[in-house]
Image (cartoon, rainbow, N blue to C red):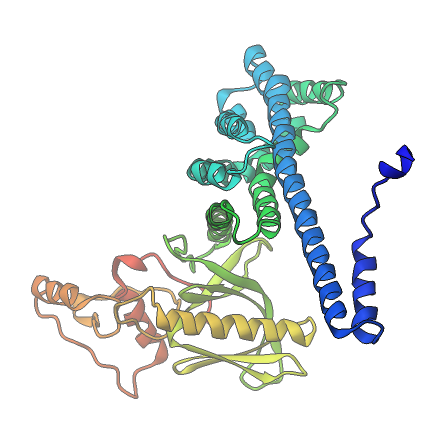
Length: 446
């Protein structure tokens, strides 16, 4: 009898309740009043069960954030305790090498230790904790910006620092470490995206009417901004590194200064240029920047390039000529080039899309507010007297033009006519570019 009194009926599973509700709703086995009452009770049971399930998932998400942060700090402690500090104490590398390898990882560790103190599995103000910490998480951008140098330094360790390399291998094999140095160094790079994923999961399991929902939503937005900030810095660093690499590859007389603030590399690659007659084609290398196109060819050294023409992007037009054959054209005022790729037609489509988007963006937000001339063909400069300078085709502003007129006596404006040869016109253009392009000369015509 006591056992019967202490018996508590089991709550039916949620899927069974939903199935039962569907049967009762379709069958006329109850009176209308009874049916309405039973369906209302079943709906309440389903609702209560969903709320309990979401509440459990929310608690699990909070616990996962705390456990994840604990494990992350353990990884950073391992990196500093077994690698950074022993290397400094034993003087196995210079301070510059240590800085390249570890960056500001100790500063990051201090920030995350403070974050862990504020986090707790039972706390409900997780969103507010991340809102308070978000401004300090921008320190990760410094580490991410330096991460390429970290990889380069690690790759060169066996040759450049053999003693340090042997020490690293020894530390990696220790039982308390059991991890590669590169796997520890990448953990800060992965951390901000991890925060974003965990907070979005917590937001999904937090009801809108919950008192902490707005803080969690704001924290997701702030961490997302931090992630975008880091990604933009890394992309700018990669872009600048590639621009510097291209600058070094330019050789011969046609060397152009392309490393300027705000200039971005959009696309580059080898193409085949069709001759005007259409009978032959020659290999060329095209470099699409945010404000210009460099039309180049390979130098004697395969890793070197010679710039043959500089095409202002806001004066260009690009279109597909024969899609199936992979042909497309670039027009810049009176100059036209027809190219094709050796790859599939989709490669041509990619070139055309990139060119058209870049041209449209350059025209809308031009980096060159002053008047520019047409496509520059780089030619050898010959000696000229001051009376043969033309200021109609230069990059100078009206103010600079007036200063030039005041400083030079007996200067006349030479207008090109139909009988003037192309070489003479190009020579006048190159001469009048001023300080911006005063070192640009080329050896070959296209």
